Image (cartoon, rainbow, N blue to C red; front, top):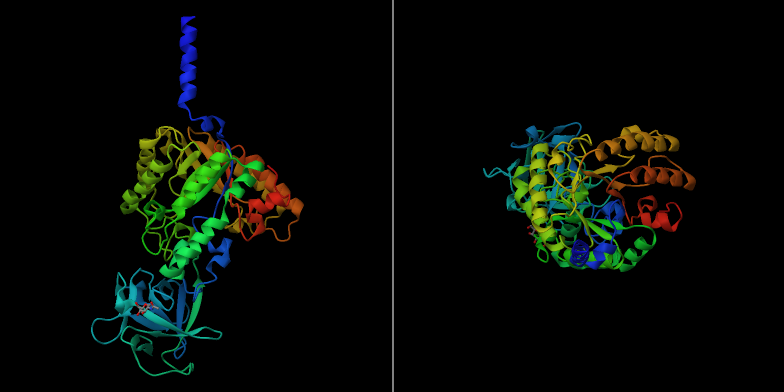
Length: 497
Ligand SMILES: *[C@@H]1O[C@H](CO)[C@@H](O)[C@H](O)[C@H]1NC(C)=O
C-alpha cells in the first residue's frame, strides 16, 4: 500500500514535470520537410527574389574571365596570384578566372586563384598586379559595360584611368581616352561569366543596405506563414527542418551585408509548430567562413574557409540557438552544420564535440544532429559518435549531381533506392546514433517521366527512408520547380503521406 502510494505520487510528479504539450508532441521518427529558401536564400528556388538588383548578373562570387579584344588573349594572374597580371592565354581555367566582390552596383574587386585581389601597383607605374590580401581603394574598380553580345567592358581604376593591355605581359591602369568599343581598343575586354552564386550574401549585398531590409522582411513574412503549418500538419508531416545562417545569432544587428529579422521569423516557427503539434529542427546551414562553398553556405565568393580557427565563433552560434530554443517543447533537434565538404575531418570532429557540449549546457536530452561530410563515406563518423548521447547522423540522398545517374531510367532509379540507399542507410542506423535522411527529393535525371513514374519513385524513397530511426526531411516545402516542392507534390497527388 505504502509502496503503491509512493509509486503513484512519483508518476504524478513525473507527469507534472513535463510540459503538457511535450506529452502531445511528436517523437522520432519524423516525417519532415525542409523550409529551404526561407531564412536562408537560394536563388535557384525563387529567382524573382533577385529581380530588383541592378547588374544582377554581377553579384558577389560571380566568376569572370577577361579577354583583351586587341590581343585576343585571356588575362591571367601569373602563378595564380602574388605577381603581375598578364594577357597571354589562349584558353581560360583557374588562373584566368576571377571571382568578384561587389562593392556597390558598379564597383567591384577582382579576386584571383590564390585569393589575392587585383590592384594598382604601389610603384607608381600603374601596373595591375595581384598581391594585396585585402581590397582597398587601389583594388576597387568600376566596371563599365557596353550593351550587346558578347558582353564587352572597360575597367576604371581609382586614379580615374582605364585598364589597358600594353603587351601580353603588361596590363596598366593609365588609359585616358574614350572608346567606340572597337576590337583594336587596348582598353576593351570581352567578359565571360562562368559561374554565378545566388545565396543570402549575394541577395543582401546585391540590394545594398537601403533596399535589402525591406526585401528580406517581405520575403520572410510571406514565404512561410502559420497557414503552411496548418497545411503540413493536416497532410501527415510532423516536423520541419529550418536552415539558418550564422548571422542569426547577432540579430537584430548582424554584420553587413546581412539583415536582421530572421530570428523573429524563427521564433514564429516555434510558436506555430507548437500550436500544430509539430517539431522544429534548427539547422545551422551556413557557417562563417563557408563549409562547402555553395550558395546556401553564406559564402561571398565560393572559397571554403571554415576550419580550426572558425570553431569558437561557430560553437557560439550553437550556444546561442541552444540557449534560446533548447527547452522549447517544440524543439526537434539542433543540427550543428549542414553538408561540410572539403573541410578537415579532425577539425570537424573537434567542432562537433564542442558544439555538442554547448547544447548539453542547456538541455541534457535534446537531439544533436551531425551532418555527414558530403565528400566522405556515410560511415566516417560512426566510431566518433559512440561517445555521445541522443546524437543523430544526417545523410542526404539525391539521385542527382553525379554522372552515375545520368543514364538511369525510372526503374534503375527505384532499384538504386531499394538497394544502394537502403544498404547505406542500414549501415548508418546500426550505431548508437539515430539516422536521419535530412534531405531528399522526388526529382531525378530522367527526362519526360510520367506522373506515375514520380509516384513510384517517391513511394520507393518514402518506404526506404522511413527506416531511418530519426526520420526524413524532404527538400523542400516550396520551390519554383514543382518536383522540389512537397507542397505542390501533395496538392497534386504525386505524394501522399
Ligand atoms: C560605389 O563605390 C565607389 C568606390 O568605393 C564609390 O566611389 C562610389 O561613390 C559608390 N557609389 C555609390 C552609388 O555609392
